[in-house]
Image: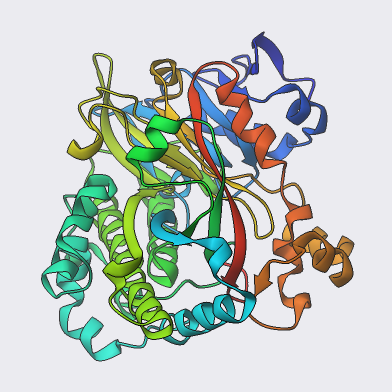
Length: 476
């Protein structure tokens, strides 16, 4: 805490010191600042600020907490020609991300038995839990290369979704440059988890629009007060985890051979223009595309589940894709006159109205940004404002952990979790399995969202509240 110096409203910095080539900036509102105890996360930002080619500043989001290498809620920009790429600055779950579906259903028209029927029908189609494989293994094996190199557009060619879905996915559902030849055998072996959500903080949530802050934008997104919504939060599963593991190991060896000093083992890195750096970007793009396919396949399964339980066709209920965006990713982007490689780990790209990299359907208003909460807590839909350029067009990706998983299991009792959930349905009866994901284990999501809203970086569109949640056991 002594390292933080206030710069402006909700903005603090860690001045350059030691090996740092850039300063670090952390965004916290007064409530978050009073509770801030993330010394390890600050140390990780300072380490990142010592990497070759780093740009000033390295950014910590309001939901920042310590992770592997770069903290979760960290943004690192490096020069595209002379900088390095770090597997640890992207993270284990490459393209962990979130997608929102709108519906034309009134949430109040669905009683508890109907909600339970829906989440049970979804869970039957979408396996959850650590290590769970997808149910379509032969199809995945037959088309694996196409999934990882071509992404969601190829899945749509196979009929998994609606043609218009592709217009509402970051990067059009495909990050270019993917090359299956850059993957290890073990990574390919672990690529059997399409249409699965895994464990940890991943979920499928049926909720409803609780509050509207921006009426015009809410109408644009088909988010009406009281309407049912669906949130999907998952990523590249064991496939992306293996890629990060493989390249963290190989990058350490490459750095040693090139006499490249690394600030920490978790920030193993290689020059972007080196063979190792290019190979990582090709493999990472495979995981990004895999995750886009994962969420697209889950969407198709959810639509079929609605038809099964409620009758008719899925179109009868809307179930339109509002947006799908990535959390853990590295992408080349133009920031002002600089071409940079932006590492976002537990951070979300945030483009304001008029930015040319917005998807065409949202060019005039800026794409919606989805900030999921923990089970039992609110989620938010927000939009970016022009000042967000100061964070390399990035905002937070969720609430951020307040307690470690171990501390949550130790300090939170099942009864406390039950009380926090209230009437929210959680698939499965044993709450002990979900203690680490209790709302009490996370920061106040409203304080996190307000941190950027109060300084004009973002504007709130809508607040969502959960009704029924599917979560998998195990820590990913």
